[in-house]
Image 1 (cartoon, rainbow, N blue to C red):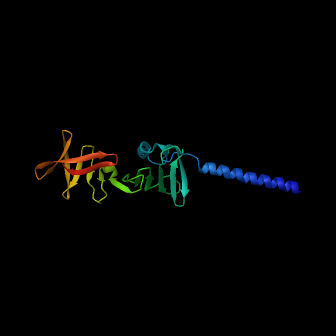
Image 2 (cartoon, one colour):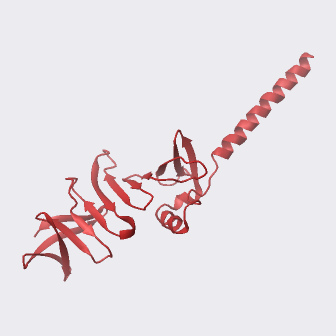
Image 3 (cartoon, one colour):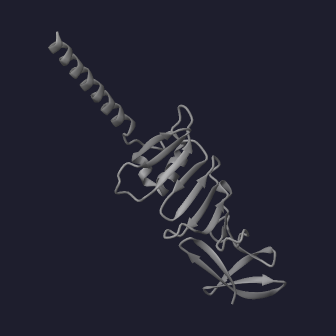
Length: 199
């Protein structure tokens, strides 16, 4: 009787361990994190974050934390509220090595860039989504400095409490102030457009 009980206990413990391992493997499998999104959103998200095609989702209370399946990918993660029957919901927050992105259900996006070494905020921008306009604040003073869009050739700078269109001519930039053109310095940096001021 003792031998049968011993073998039964050993078999039961082994079965529990196997079920636990299978459940852990199932919960940590890789899957397409954007498969429930509309096709246009899928293409947009995968063009920015290709790792979402093979990602791992972890339920953390009322949030889903999505990370690359491979530890050799760039350090990135997506956080979104958890909704039953959908893997993705909004707003979504993506954190990478230099930027924090916040995306809402209308594809409007705010990007906050920070210094990787200290974690201090460096600059931020806001994209209006379908309107195709992006505002940049490159010095964190709370006032957007550059407005880009709609379209790649529409650019304005905030100067003297108003938006002025930028005139691009001969690889230089100008603004028109009361009929007088003044040359300005506008730079495209890794973190976006920066209005330095008048030359």
